[in-house]
Length: 203
Image (cartoon, rainbow, N blue to C red; front, side):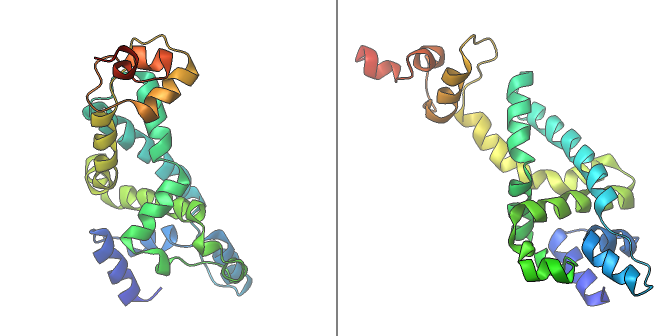
């Protein structure tokens, strides 16, 4: 990987690697690495990094959601699942502008796999691991990546009332998630009826 490409990735990410090899490995798909090995070239791929990155990212997201006011296991788990979906990670990865620097295999390029957000999400996870290994600091890694998620989590926290003690069924909870008003003072009533309380009472 060319030095100028590495520099471009670092600028877009906002982090300069001490060990550039970690970044290169995070951006290397297994198919590309296998092709290089067939030509007797030593090349490490991102697969192991994806496992580590996934674990580190989970910890970052849980801590962030608690700090944002999510106060039940259910609300934290549901929101974390939304945020860490590879499609969501892939979309954020595209926004950073690092996609052109991923090293895909020839077959993957022909298949157009580089356009799939779920595939890009895998590289996002690998990138988290690379940063974590390079910094040797959870706090530094968290500080770098948390801003990518915090805005969406905060907006969701402000919009949806807490239903920590609610005994609503799952369908009612799902209705609440997408329909409750920002200023709703009767969330359980609305969720149970699956209608706006004010529409029902005329208040």
